[in-house]
Image (cartoon, rainbow, N blue to C red; front, top):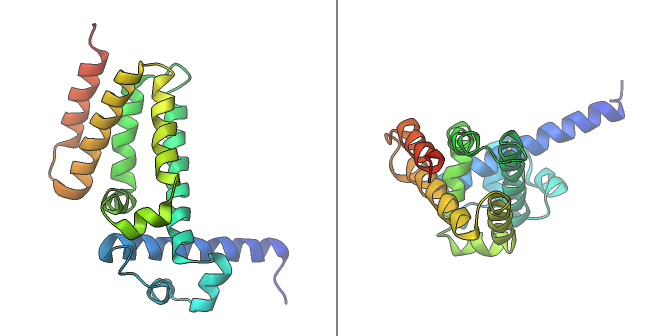
Length: 182
């Protein structure tokens, strides 16, 4: 019996997820420039041609990974509420990194990979501006930069360099610093 349109849509979504997960694994492990489309398809257990029916290029895969994570970041801002409850936001950022560690390892490593930066084009700058802009809804421009770079730096160190970093303790120190009376 042929599949229904709903079944086809579910199968297509599952295949897309397999491809994204395989690309994430290989980009994070081997680097963007060193990962071939053929390797991604093989890691996903699919034919290379099927990959191209979902993504026109390796660059498109990288963009899709970043777009998927942007939704997570936007969710963390929504959870912080319209008045931007800073403790919730700061703790949420650390939780995101911990929950999606392979992506964040990729995110922080691509910032030093010229081929990946070229593939991301303006998306990375737009993403950074949107986060800072959301922070500026409750903070001054200088404060938004300060908080953004502090959270970003701690998360990068945890993801790339210091897996034994006491992330929860550091996050609570940041929360205390940003919520102390001025």
